[in-house]
Length: 83
View 1 (cartoon, helix red, strand yellow):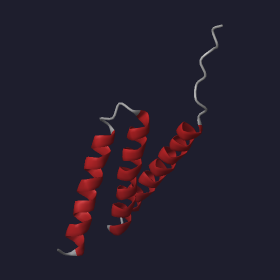
View 2 (tube, rainbow, N blue to C red):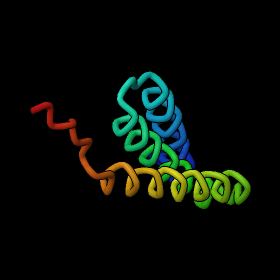
View 3 (cartoon, helix red, strand yellow):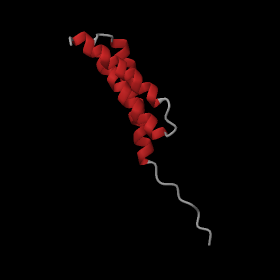
View 4 (cartoon, rainbow, N blue to C red):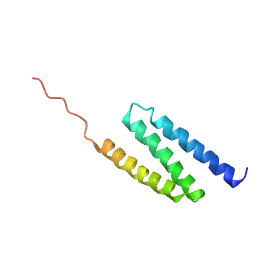
C-alpha cells in the first residue's frame, strides 16, 4: 500500500468514527468518540496538506477535551437529606 492509500483509509476511518460518535446517547461517550475522530482528521488533514481540515478538527479536539475535563471534574450530585 502506498502512502496516499493509507491516508485515504485514515480519512475513511475518521469519518466512520465521527458518525459513530453522533449516535451516542451518553455525552461522555459522544465526546470521546468525537475527539478520536477529530484527531484522526487532524492527522489526515496534515498528511494530505489539507490544512483547513486539520485546523478545524484540531479546534474540535480542543472543544471535546475541554468538555470532557468539565464532565469528569463535575462534583457528584448530592441528594438532599430527608430526615
